[in-house]
Length: 460
Image (cartoon, rainbow, N blue to C red; front, side):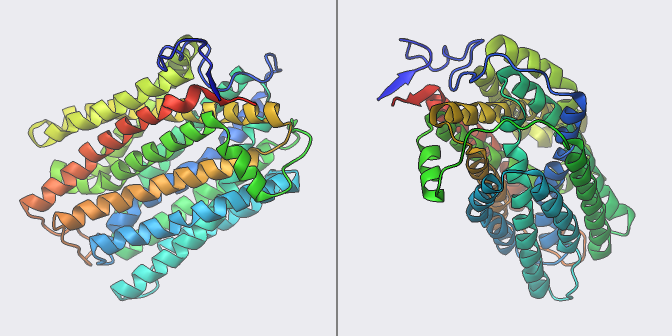
């Protein structure tokens, strides 16, 4: 049996008021987190921002235009290692739950990830096939390390504070740093490639730069959260199967997770197309860097605005609004070949504003789902929920480049081993445009419909 949070009304949109639909606060009052803890936790987003962004931005064009791997094969090489996280993320969640502490996982996995990330772009083999295989193995190993950092990291907010509003405050800090990390890594990584000679050498330097950024974020969050109070429930489920059963029975979490996966696929598709769109539609030098800066930069400015909107209209309705802003902007970009570059960048800025809202509200709704489950079961299971969450996000972000690569393959995109993009015919350029615009718009728009189940609860 199911009951709606909104009372007798059946309108899922009307349920999203100042008291959002879905899990309600478990504790109505909670002390505020110290700024040191807020900043320390937020700086972990340097790791998430770098690893979540740069592979999706650089890896596909690196494979197609530097290593000479066919677009369809390149898509598989990017997809499969990240799809592996669907298996390893829940395992990382269970292990961190049973350990009783999250921070050692952050330190060890984060430092390993920094080294492994640099290795992805090392390209020690000359041939395209050997280099492609090497990238797949290095990326798989790095994705495994990332799982053991990200799952405990995402689990921490539900244990650092028991306050509904305080979790939103913590997520606002986190997303602000995440936006900055994405801006720094995503905008500077391509510039490092160009400034250090391009091709294989340039990508090696760029991989080293991002690896160092990951190490900095790891150390900052490990030491910044030292001594922070942790609120945990009494015990954990005795088996992984039992934990997954409880997670699947959490209707709000299930709806939010499905939405998050599909939206991540849409975002990942757009990120994968940035360099291709810059090279073959805008045809501007450093266009990829400008596009990425236009996408992420507004997030730093609109974060306070989204926070105010969330307080007034609730998290659910605000997430829907942010998603529709993203989708609408992506559809407008269909007209890019006829628009001045400045107008394109402004539209991309609107898409970035929508992206910022998606991140703030989805990630602040996740701890609410975890707290709802803790109140219902009395058990500490944050790691399992966040393991599924990060596995879903990773799968979605991995599907994005795979989808984009498939579009390129279907439209006849020509690969190159010179370090420079090959000239493309009008059909291939159309594929570049459609993959960057209409496909992300459709995916993000469809994901909104999946939020219908967020206000549902499973009655005892």
